[in-house]
Length: 213
Image (spheres, rainbow, N blue to C red):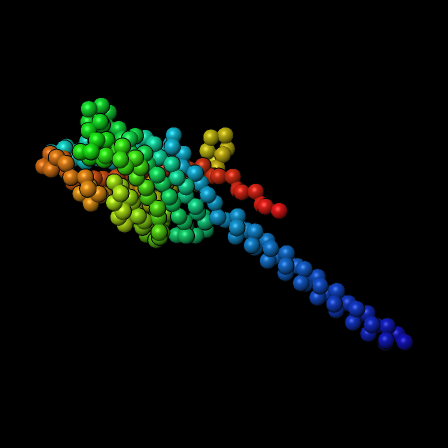
């Protein structure tokens, strides 16, 4: 009688133990899935703390300038930054070289034709690690309706708290362009064709989307 009772307890205990093991595994799996989803973050480019600068030779001396209006997003997995993506839009009319006459000329059909082509865009297609926190970011740059694949040399400057503790990320990107590739050919001989681009980006962590019921 005692043997039968113990046998019954063993039979009853086995399903319970299996249930607990299954439940534990399910919780661990859900936790891992949640962590994986949480690892992907979207940062919105802060136009106030972002600078898209360039310099180009005027005869022998390089003249600097920048675009003051830029927006976009950077989607990152901090554990695997090579899986990141970036999209950005620059307002062409925001070009500034601190000389009104020159700026108006750059916005005209002689150069950027800002009224006809008000925005230039960049959309990444691949990130490749090239060193400690550095990446070769391939993507398509579109300017004056000309789309061309380019490679940005990108450095991840860090992630952490910014103003009032808000989460931010910092980035630097470098690129050299030939302006003729984008149908900007005016003033040959006076203005160089090689344009050095330097971009500094501060981006704010976006709020996660609310789950739909």
